[in-house]
Length: 340
Image (cartoon, rainbow, N blue to C red):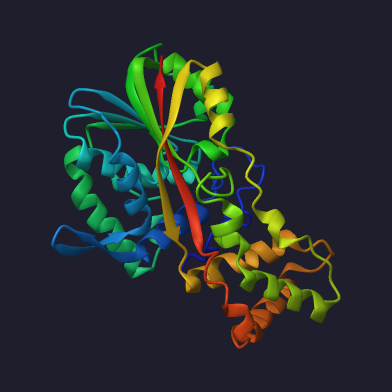
């Protein structure tokens, strides 16, 4: 079986790196869909519940705000493995989508999921039945749209494949905070027709929401992490940065409006979602990555992972470490930017 990490180290912290965090490495791209395949939860839709995958749910909520119509050309910025692309087609009938993705691994998986690649480069390495079933189900749903999408492997900020003012609208699902906002909106201004909109969202490590500040609600501030970090340091004679430094958003609505206005857009915040972080997922997928980013002493990563695992076990039995019930959300703002 192909051995994969849950995510590339640092991917959850969103620190300083421009571009997609899952660059050419197939194991990281596969890990993204593995997480999606294992993250099924119940969503109430009208009078009946239904199962939906985690990232698909995020794409659905974003695309709810798009005004794309039949016959229009839509950019899917940072299209990843095609999750938001499929949701675009489901909600917006008769459109044509251009999916732009910098990661080679994600680009190839998206093409496979939309019947534009046979998957030969990676399928033979996969033994995860849940992932294979997820892909099979996805391909059944996407087959009718295979000729209505073109995926491009490119850095959006440098792309030159489109004529000026040739696109009607765009979405950016968890994409903009990996880019230079000014460069992205400069590029969008060139490509979008007048009045064209961009519907995009972000995360609480990037944006400080006025009503729900990251410091008050963000899961990166959860006290459980502080207890684990203290335990790791005390048992290993290590030093660490303050865990609050993990999430210091540099953007608020005023700054975003100023940046996008300079590039010819009017921007409004149209929604805020509080995405509850499952505690088990937080412990399993986030805590070690956070600890690794915070430790300032030199230590072998294997040893640090072991110490963190032991610290988590001890911390789970400490009732004081489980009292923080407020810092458990990723705060996801949604914006509409319209070209003037």
